Length: 103
Ligand code: FES
Image (cartoon, rainbow, N blue to C red; front, side, top):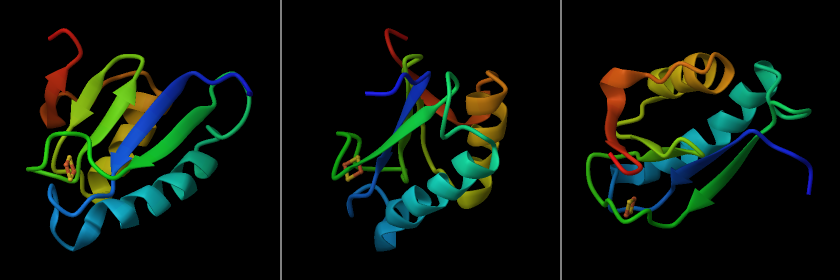
């Protein structure tokens, strides 16, 4: 497997957000990662969809590892900020964080 720097998990289940908004986010994420140059090389970001991340509310839910940062209520606009500010820039979008690993 190619090296990667971060792994983004997107819940595409139907309990945390209506109308499966997570599915649209997951597709949009691929475009954003490509645009920001995060699909290849040492800064590569892996993405995965999950049927449920055990939150089941206030979605869509997106988690970023290895930091273990969990975002809720992720709109397309917020997803773009997460990609640009967090995944590319290394700065967590604090106001959208609802949980942290060991936090
Ligand atoms: S359905 Fe999204 S966290 Fe459970």
